[in-house]
Structures are given as structure tokens and as C-alpha cells.
Image 1 (tube, one colour):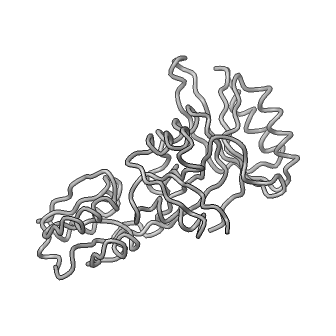
Image 2 (cartoon, rainbow, N blue to C red):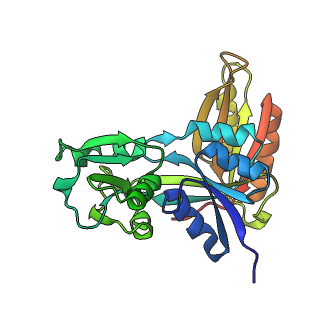
Image 3 (tube, one colour):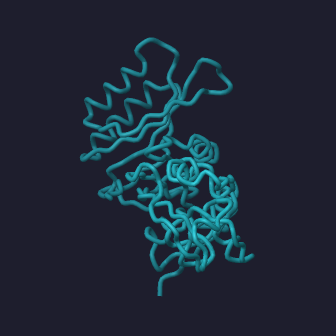
Length: 277
């Protein structure tokens, strides 16, 4: 029997992080629930967890900048990714109808993504909270009537809540990309690596970024993501976080060497297998 893999997530059982961890690790999963992303990183750093699952970008809201910073600042390594289709559901204690609901609690992003649905119910007050599944848990635990939660189908199953409305998000094609992170090393053999996350800082010179992008193109790398963040200690200077995919690992190796020469700072955040939805 294989040993369980301890995986830290932000949120409770039934959260979208929990769903990703379940799908990615299957029966090997041993869940370590944390209230914040910072806490999940601390669990990883103190070896209380083997890996962590962390949301990194959403197709509607864009990059989750603080999580990029957490990975970089703590020298963590991305060893995998998972794209999850996000479906928000309105759930309540059994036996209630929507006219009974005075407030709906959920994460600010979930409330924002479902705002159009609630325009039909102007008497319902939307209240921000820390986590989607946390609110489902609280309603179930304290048997709270008159309050609904926006959360996953899995949360309604775990906490025995009724779903009044399914998939209430305004944009139906709503994908969040999660990364699997660990302290060091790799879970992926070289022959299976076809994606990498890199960080580089360039001198403030005309054409410096264009030159790096040309190297990527010449080496047949496909740039799937680029995100700039200011270098706090050097005003006017920027660090670039990029994701690239490739078919030939040797082309990637060549590009990596060239970019390391061209950049004032260069760092590999992760080398892994691209997730196919």
C-alpha cells in the first residue's frame, strides 16, 4: 500500500482547492487544510505537508499576484498544474426556498462572478467572506436559516445542503489554473517535461524584453503567459514571470542558457507536464 501524500490547501473540504487536490492525487491524498495561502506555504516549509495546491490565475480575473510572490519569495518549485472549470452554486439548509434567503455569503471573487444572477433578487444582501466552502460548513454546522452560500457541488454534498440554483456564474467558461508546489526537486522526469515557469529581471534598456522574446521564438518555445511585477528595491525595474511550452526539451535547454546570460537575474520556478483539460 502506497504512503499517503500530505497536501496543503487553502480552504476547507469542498473548496475548489480540495477538488483539485482530489483529482490530482486521487486515493493517495492526505489533506492538510489551511485558512490562508501563507499558512499552506508554512506547512510546506516546516515539512508538515509534502506538497501544496495553489490557485495562480483565473480566466476572468487574471493572475493572482500575491501567490506568484509567495512561490518566488519562498523558493518553492512548481511541479505540476491543473485547470479546473469553476461552477458556482447557491446552496442553503434543506427545506428553504430562495424567498427565505436574506443574505448570501461567499468569497469576494465568487460574489463578483455571480453578481448578474442576484440582480433578479435585489432584497438579498451579498456578504464577503474568506472562503466558499467555509460558509457552506458554517451554515451546516450552526444550522443557519435565511443565509445561503456560493460554493461547489462537492461542498453541498459534504455539508448536506440543498442547491437552489446551479452554475450561477455570469461567464460559464470560467477556468482557474492551479499549480502543485513543493520545497525543492521535481516529480517529473525530463522526457515528460513540456512546460516551464520562469522568472527573469532585465536591465532597463530599450529592446531588452523583445530580445528575450525573440530567443524564445527562435528556440521554438510557445509563450503562454507573461506577467510583470515591479522590483520593489529598484524603482523602475521589472521582473517578468513567464510560462512557456515546448515539444523538444533540448530547445528549451538552449533558450534557458541564453536567457540566463541576457538577464540580470534568472530563476526557474518549475519544470513540469502541461495539464490537458
